[in-house]
Every structure is written in structure tokens, then in C-alpha cells.
Image 1 (tube, rainbow, N blue to C red):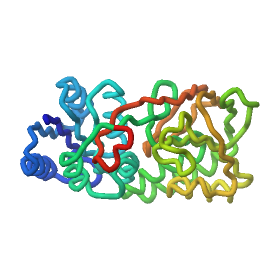
Image 2: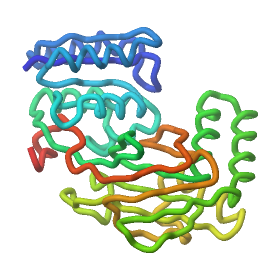
Image 3: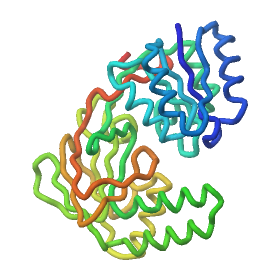
Length: 287
């Protein structure tokens, strides 16, 4: 087995000694590999070079944005990707490996790793593998990022902006040809993490989140950031393979835990084969 390991030492919980610790884990398991620690601004190019080297697997120790980028770059035909938990939310690593350290997940993958095809969603060409939320509740992610950076003043300002945006630009949507709907926000969850979808479901779980008051939108914003949006009383859940969403301005969004800004009109589709993940044998149901 020959692997490439990319560490983003500037991310969340990776740690400056991550390259040395990763090399020690490789040596412990008798695996040949190169460990990279790209400088700021070089991460994307480093991922591209690591994938182009055609290793047996690519291991990425980083945050949510880098995990999503690596999986998207590799795709279903590239090397299996192991996104290891090095960020704050770690949505994709936790979905694949459970809530364990990157060191434990890395050791398990090297010991008994198998490729597993993972489905996902696509919004205007941008992929996600866990969940996406579109609409004003996504603005709470900006407040979360400011709080993570220790900027309580900026977090408060962004929270106030999220409240002001509530109900100011509602989304219109059409899913799988059903009648058009209107909602404050639309959430899309992949089979990988949905409690209601089997792993082999050929659709996304779509939820219209439609609060009726400012108090409701505040609660929904908090629940969205905390990951409890499905239990919110203003949520209506369905299925989606293809869809369209539009609004009166650019649409705020969260893709696998990372804030984004989308166009005024976006197309949604389910991707049955999004990328191959490297997972321990007890989690490789479709290896």
C-alpha cells in the first residue's frame, strides 16, 4: 500500500506535530507514504499533486472545507480518500468513522481499510457529501465562524444580520417535478448521515424549513448550527433527486459545515457515485 498524506497544520485540531505523528503511524503499520504539510495558500495545489500521483489512498488531516475539496477532486475514479478529523465540526470524518481522533481513524484505515463508494449531492457544480442548507439560517454559520475566531463582537453583528435577513428573501423551489414551494430555507441531507434513508437510497433527504416568526427563526438558526434542525417543529421532510431553487438575491448556504454564497438560481441533483472513501472493513458495506 502506498499513500499520500496531506496535513493542514493551520486547521482546528490538527496540531503542528501532525506530520511527525502521521509518519510514525505509517511506520507502525508498515505502509509506504509521503506526508505533506503545505504552507498557507498551497493546500489546493498540494491536494491536486497528491491525487495526480495515483496513490492507493489519499489521507487528509484537515477541516471540513479541505475534506470536501479532497473528496470532490478525487471523485469516483480517483484514489480512495480518508478525510480525518482535524477541524471543528468534522462532519464528513464523523459520518464515516464516528467521533474518534484522526490518529485512531488513520490507524484503523491503514490496518483494514477498504474503498467504499459514497453518494452525495451537487448544487451548481459544487458537491457535498453530508448535508447542505440554503437560505437565511445558513447565515448563522458566519456568526459561528466569528465566535470560533474569538471575535464575540463580530459574532453578535453577524447574528443580528441573520435575524434581519429572516423573511426578507424567501426561497422558491421545485423538487422532482412536484408543485412549487416557498420556504425560509431548504436543507438537503445525504444517505450517508440521514436517519431516515438507507445507505443505498438513490435520493437526498430534502427538508423545507419554514418558521413563522422571528422567534422561530432564532430557534431554527441555533438548531441548524447545533445539527438538530430535523427535530425543529417548522420542518417538513421529503425526498429529492433533482431540483431547482431560486431567490431575489444570492443565496447563503452551508455545504458540509462550510459557509458559501450561491447564485440567485441553483440546480440540485443527487450524485449516486460521488467519491470513494477509505474506511475500516467493518464500515465498508459496499466495498
